[in-house]
Image (cartoon, rainbow, N blue to C red; front, side):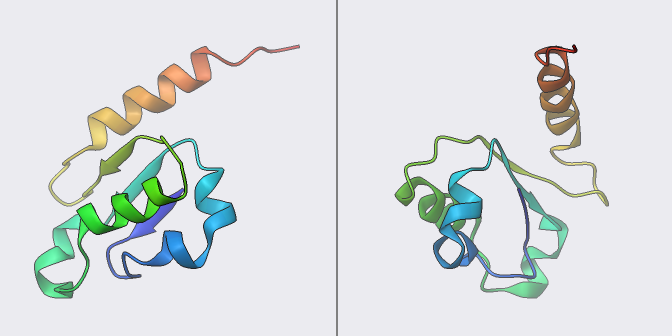
Length: 85
């Protein structure tokens, strides 16, 4: 599941079914946190945990590259675990 810093950290609470089913929560556009002002990654994570989701949470920024290596590693590991018919 992708959650942009520009959308608001309350989205997991507003859309619980989608976020509860997520295998990973990627907080995107984190380079804009200072400009957005009211998005708190920790609060978004708390909302997710309230839904009893243990999905990993990654903070990503394509501008700085923060979190991108971890996300790519996660994707590669997920693909490696898939069974192909």
